[in-house]
Image (cartoon, rainbow, N blue to C red; front, side, top):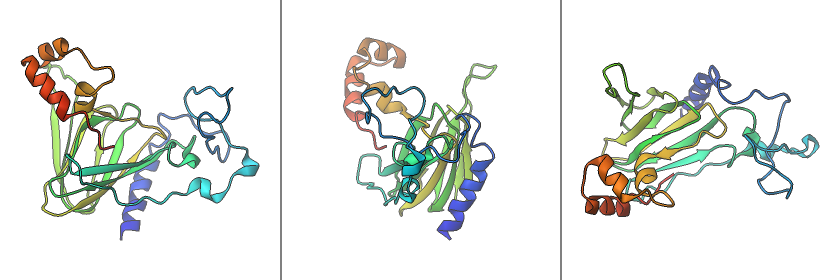
Length: 224
């Protein structure tokens, strides 16, 4: 049954898989690890492995369940070009998302990809927020998802997933980029390196400096 859900996710992804990443000009372009050559320059992708040296293992990866014993109670395990080099130039990636009871994938964005999520086990409350509309407001779309349900998060928009059940949950997320990127909002705002000036954050959130310092201690962790 889980294999069927995965197939559905990838078939749904196929219609928009090449919307943003460049289309390949050959059958395969297995990525060469970064830094393999001192003359290598990273531009917007990876260098290709010699086709004569490509093997089946270049297109294979086993993904174990994620450890949800953390403050968010969740773990997103990505399979991008960085983890599976055979994805290079194919314009797709995925993530296995494990949720403990009441586990949360906090508000985040993918700057280079839309995401389609299918629930394998459990019940999730998901949602995303639009950019400013004509009334200068940000509209929230939310939906409760059960096993077998699918939901789409448009590219670049802030979104989240929350396990509202008392048991574990599992979902598979497919994205139309080999390297979609992720910006987790709390971690990016309060845990950047170097940190954003507390004066800026205090004024932006209209709170005291002590609140900013507290939040920095809370959100310096990322579960992705």
